[in-house]
Amino acid sequence: MITHETKEPLHLSLMYLEQIIQDGKIQEEIAKPVKSSLEIALAGLNNFLAIKRSSVLYEMFDVIQLISMQINIYKSYLKQNNIQLDVKSNMQRIIIYSDKTIMLQILNNLIGYRTKLLKKINKSVKKIDIKIQTKSNFVVISICDTFEGQYQPHSLSFEMSRTMANMIGGKLEMVSSSKQGNIINFTIPTEGHEKPED
Image (cartoon, rainbow, N blue to C red):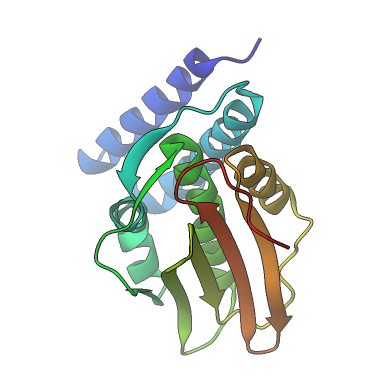
């Protein structure tokens, strides 16, 4: 049976790996593939546990602060791979009543997958734009990238994110996919009960 306790060995392994890198006991180039594999396994486990939950745990939180917190996790990775990330919003704070853990997991999937795609391309300008706006009783988070290729809307990461979005009354959709880049809209109700219109 997979539970939240299953994550503990992965967390401990990551902490130990980071410590021995800092102590200079292992070269970072050797440790990177191991660390990356552990992080991917942890993200996959988090996805599974979020979907497996039978109930949604609602709480009040600031969406902009949550996105900023998530972006901070990727800061060094983005800089290392020459990827620019910009966030724009029509408000300074957007308070919603939803499931914070599920929201974090969706954002992690969407931002993480896009950074991995952009890392692979040889291009001078690699960019992710996140636009956050309110529309009626909904928050729309648009994520646009400069990846010149088809984002896989039926990939496991996208489908898991879509399932989680549905769990909290939201909607995840591919708005466009072209040579200029991809746009995904994540629409979420501010009050945790209304469904976005098709």
